Length: 403
Image 1 (cartoon, one colour):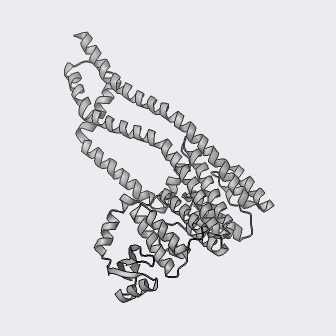
Image 2: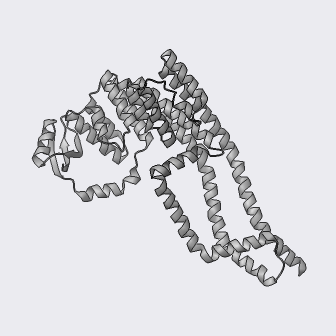
Image 3: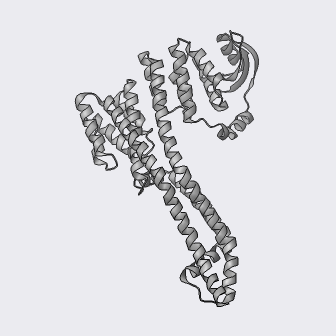
């Protein structure tokens, strides 16, 4: 269906601009007039415009924080008895992200045309997840949309804070290691060969560390272009492989079994599973349907398989933890507490308690890792620099002593 770009004056005199889908110009004009808008300009939305917006989309990426702000603002307006179409337009006007503003404007147009809010969200799957859409749908069904949106904003904010802490803990070591790799490459390719030439011309006996350094430096200086090509090829190849089902599975398996960070990621996925499932159950979503949604929300293939096994077990009349007990990456305490929740009929409360407990554990681990990683990185950096300097300076010192 063709898309048209319009400018129109609403009933309160405000000038609005946006996009509308219609079978033709007349249908688009009629749809806007039916919404009580005075049409000022209407023209086809060309493919060139769409492509140019897509090319610049990465500059205005819609972040989880943007969605938290929108969700909370929409909840406040609805609870204040602002009509839903007007509330959505007000949120769109206040949004600074151009991409999100276009999406919200399109949603408000659909609502004014009679669509439900959840159905309008469903037309933008790249922005709103199935988890988000189903929570909104549950709020519409129960008549508690404002409360559900507020609860949803709080849960999203907690998840955003959790991932922000993890990224903050990893930025420093990654930056140091990447910088060290770049400096090492430059040293081995351009600096070390000149020093090695002096040692080779002196015709002195070189220690094993120096001979190894000379060999590695020769490879870097003669085949630096090949090393760059192979490195880029390896990075691209790994990215393509990780996008395949098998590659994604193995990448997630490695993530859960890393020496230092594996335990942290295991607990993060527990928090995400319990918080998401508890939120959906709080919104009145059926257990099996909630599990199907959560399977694609957790973000780990091993967890996804475990949740789908759980769905089959629940459909067969078995306990929620029957499948979980077969997977070692799921903590025993989680299974025990879920069993208690099923037995007492308080699964939703137990899920929130588990999420809160492991969220505190993640905070503690991230805080400790931040303190431990910095000296560890400095030690690795010092060892690397020390080995390189000693491999060069010891022969030079011997050479100067012999002279």
